Length: 94
Image 1 (spheres, rainbow, N blue to C red):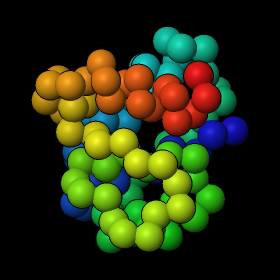
Image 2: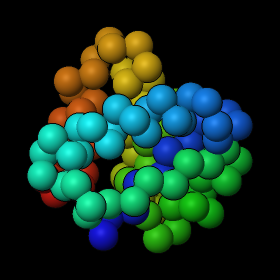
Image 3: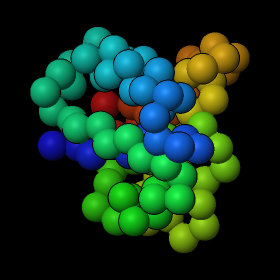
């Protein structure tokens, strides 16, 4: 089971939008049921990433991460989204 942490300022609205889009991406690429998504505030991201496979954040990544990071802004704006999707899939070994 892959653990994906989605972080935004407060861990509620923005990360929820990104979570829907990332779930659709992963399901479309054969990962349905093989991942869990944890939403959190950016201030909690470092701890949440301790055992995670990937962090997707809509802000700058915190220092000291132990997992790969993908910028989540393209999932909100659409600008650069194909590249961000590819980064997610590669980070998760798809």
